[in-house]
Length: 189
Image (cartoon, rainbow, N blue to C red; front, side):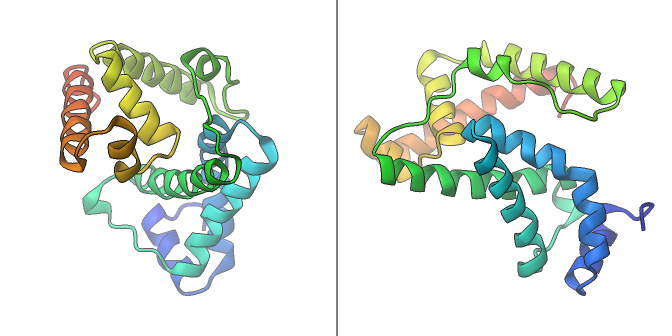
């Protein structure tokens, strides 16, 4: 079962094979946890989010389509959605905002158990993303931070910025195009 592709494992999970979920967790549990810990900065909460991600795979029969992108991107989108739901709930409960600063992001430890090659790839990707972010204005960086790391919805951002929803959507779209263009120039997309 270890030699199966991610798509094959997802098909087995949909048919109720818990061993396939275990293999998928062994492959990607650290990645999901790493994303969650960066966002919430709390180990028990990050573990809960990781568990929720794999429970969603098990209980909803989610469909991964390899024609639409890489499995890791799809999995991290699910992780991001669950994490953002948690952050929104936390913000509603505490009426506060979780702050993710660049210093805190850079101070996070690397994932444990990665091979030397994976460490190099991860470090290189981090540097490329940071370089691409240098091409954004302060307001664009703030928009990305609010939307992706602090869990604001587009409607909440429109209210926060006192701008029409369409304007906020367009600003985010333009910001992501800038990031994509600069990452693509490096050959990453």
